[in-house]
Amino acid sequence: MNPVQQAVVWLNDPLNWSNPGGILDRLGEHLSMSALAVLLGCLVAWPVGLWLGHTGRGGGLVLLVSNVTLAVPTLALLTILPLTFLGFGRPAVVVALAVFAVPPLLANAYTGVRQADPEARDAARGMGLSGAQVLRRVELPLAVPYLAAGFRTAAVQVVATAALASFVNGGGLGQIIRAGFGLDIAAGGGQIVAGGVLVAGLALLVEGVLAVVERVVTPRPLRRARRAANRRAADATAGG
Amino acid sequence: MSLHLSYRAAPGNPWFSWQYVRDNSDTILAALREHTWLTARAVLIAALVALPLAVAAYWFRSLAAPIVALTGVLYTIPSLALFAFLAPYLGIGAITVLTVVALYALLVIVRNALAGLNQVPPEVREAAEGMGYGRWGRLFRIELPLALPGILTGVRLATVSTVALVTVGVVVGRGGLGQLIFAGFQNNFYKAQIMTGTVLCVLLALVLDLILAAVGRLLTPWLRGRSS
Image (tube, rainbow over all chains, first blue to last red; front, side, top):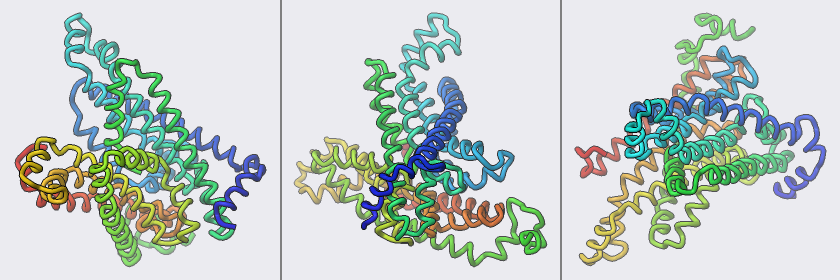
């Protein structure tokens, strides 16, 4: 039997789905830690990005953050953070993943506010809006397409990276692949491929669903900006 | 336990220890060499495959959309899943790591090279045509040189992310410096070893990036003095 057939057999075994530590358990772990990481990333990156964009300073900082995180291996953060005050377990993994969610969120929040039409900004000022009001009522709504694009890039990246949490026994679907490698290729080939299918499928699914969400939250007149934002998001985050 | 006995100059578990670096310089250098070698080969192979692909997508518009869409989908696939797909066929070893990281590097370079080629102004293209350049002459004399900044950006991004990605190769036992990091984690959470591997990884990425930036400067003398 070749590995693909073995994988089909493995996926068709109901116990592999429902056992403790089976696919359903792992999927739950994978999704919950990804969601927490993206949430944490948003809480940190969006306020900072919006504020930097509003003041127009810190473009260099945004670039620096994305360049540095590109060079830091995921494995390094996953192994270093449990040894700090965070301790072993879920919090360290979530923080490690959140670090990789920050660059796309930050860059897109910054660009989103920066690209807001200067005339709209001037008009708002002329109407007597304060700085914070301009940010909240004018720049923030105009930045929505960018925020959504950044969110999608970050979420897909985190879901993909969460597979690596298995290196430090952090749970998630990657654990299935690691267990397969632990068995040796001949015996675990099917499980390895099946795990790969699950991990890749989940990433593609999240990408697809968020693409639809992104379209829905973007008001029709801003759809053109959304496409530009997508291109920029893709350019800004070229890391695995 | 044995950790405390074997490192008399460094009791406890410090984040960094010269003692460790001195005692294990062979292992560290071997890991660094493997990491650099894997990265260099992957980026070279990726660039050699990516440039013809980008040119094909540039010449034949109908190919551009499928190529860009395919690279987008492939890019979404997590690295561990790609390892999982390839390892049963390519086996456990360096060739699997090389294939996976070269694939990701390929995607980055294709996208940036295509963007660079598309940025060539149409007037320039028409002028070249008017001067009697054929398709190939125009490509090598006009379009590729003008697309060079885009191509170099792609190669630099690909190199930096490849350095980070090679560490995932631990899954098949060939992660270069990742091997060091992972072994440190499994070896009683030996912080000095983890940190040494991490720092070397980041430094390697930085050094390779600077080298490529310097090469780029040499290759595009006409851009010097212009703020890009």
